[in-house]
Image (cartoon, rainbow, N blue to C red; front, side):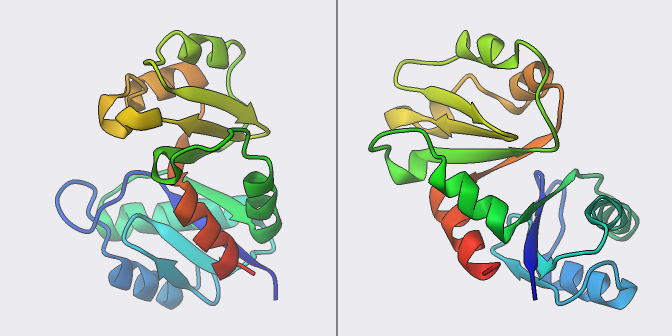
Length: 177
């Protein structure tokens, strides 16, 4: 069976955008939104059988999350093969693993997006667009010192995206194998 991951953007287990993973798994299973559902960590990673219609499945999951939890969040699908390709294409030499993130985009970014983001980088940061994935190496300063905020990324890219660190991407590739 082919498996995929549905990546949710900016969900949490408490506070704002609260979507508890156990409740989400139960709701997805009960609604039949996707099949063979599991989740990985609390940041919105749904592992499932690859749906026949990925676009419709993402919309069903987004609609269900909005109805059940009051959270409207993009749902971005990646297949196992896409995750493996993403990992193989990571463009940076010797990054600090926890500082390297892949931002999975819903589609191609706006023209000029990468140039606009380059202007916002702090010393030590690097970015590279590989297909529909934006790699961000936050360098030693990490996410906390970046100027690549959600608002900046959204405005420049023109498409929704959600980021995962390198370790999580590797684990998702293993879980979808």
